Length: 456
Ligand SMILES: C[S@@+](CC[C@H](N)C(=O)[O-])C[C@H]1O[C@@H](n2cnc3c(N)ncnc32)[C@H](O)[C@@H]1O
Image: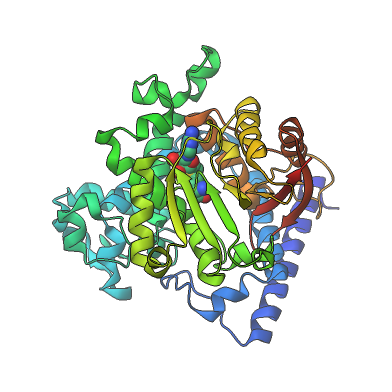
C-alpha cells in the first residue's frame, strides 16, 4: 500500500507523462522536431512557434510545476534551503558571462566548444575563475562543458549572444556593446546588477522602515528615486542598458503577441497612439510597423528619448522621415499636454508605482482624454498562490512555472517601491482616477494582459 507521499509523487509522475505525450503529439502532427537543449536557440525556427501552441504551453507549465514539486518532496530539505540561500551566485556568474561576451565568443566555434583560456583572452579575465563561473552555469543548464575547461553554447546560453557585432568590438567599445542587440543580455545584466544589488538590502529595509528609503537607495547610496538617478550624466550606460533591456524582455514572449489582445487595427488612420513612459518605444514601433497609418508619440525623459531616437533611426527610419513619430520629453506626473490621443498606452509603468502615485498618473491622462480615448495598460495580472489547483496535486498557481510573476514583483519593489497588481488592484486605481475598466485581454502566448479603460 503506497504512502500518501508516494501517491502524490505517482500522481505528479502521471501528470509529467501525460503532458509529455501531449507535447509529442503536437510536434508529431506539426512534423517538427522538439528543439534540443544542446543546440543554440533560433527564434526563426518554425519548431519554436509550436511551443506557443496553448496546449503545449499548458503541458510545459504542468511539467515545470510537477518536476520542481517532486524535487522539493524528495531532496534533503536542509540542503535545499541552504542551496537556495546561495542562488545569488548563479545571478553573479550569469552577469559575468554576459559582460565578458562569452556567448558571442562561442557563437563561431559551434558544438566543439572552446578552451576557457581562449574564451577569457579578449577580456584578459582569469581563465581559472572563468571556468568556475561557466561550470556553475553549466550545472544549471546554461552553457555546456564539452570536455574539462572546454565550453560551448547551448539553447539557454545562446540567448545572451548579441548576434550584432564581432567579439573584439564588444570588448573595445563597451559603452556601445548593447546597441543594436536583441536586448536580452541588457535585461540580464540590468537584473543581475542594478536589481541584484538592490535586492540584497530587502531585509534591512523591512526591519528598519524609513519613508522613501528603498533597497535601491541603500545599495546605491543615494536619496534619489531610481529614474532620477538614472538620468544623471554618469549613469548614461545604466540608462541605455535599461532601455535596451526593456526591449529584450519582449523576447521572453512570442514575436506577435502584442497583436493578440487590443485591436490596434481598429484605430482609424491618423489616430494618435501615445506611449506613456515609452522608453525607447520599441513596442509602439512594432505596432506602427504593422499599422503605419498610426501617429506615434513617445513620451519619456529627454535623455531616455535619446536611446529611442537611435532605435527608430536604425529600425524604422521611414516613420521619422514622414513625421509620423514624435519623441516628446514629458514627466507623467505633470499635466498631460497631448489632448487628441486615441490611445494612451502604458506598458510596465503602473507596476513601478504605489497606488497613490498611479492615481496621479492616471488622473493626468484622464484630464487630457477625449470621451473616445482609450487607456491600454499592458502588465501582468498577478494570481494569488492559493485556491483550487487546476491539476491537483500541483500548486494552484503552477509554482515555478509562474515564477516570473513573483520575481518581477520584487524587481519593482526593490528599486521603485512598486507592486504587481491583481485585477482588483487595477480596478481600484482606475476607479479612483475616474476611468472605467472596460475589458481585459489575456493574450495567448503571453504573461501580459491588456487592460482597457475608458473615461468613467
Ligand atoms: C519599466 S520602463 C518601461 C518602458 C516601456 N514602457 C517598455 O515597456 O519598454 C519605465 C519607463 O518609465 C519612464 N519614466 C519613469 N518615470 C517617469 C516620469 N515621471 N515621466 C515619464 N517617464 C517616466 C522611465 O524612464 C522608463 O523608460
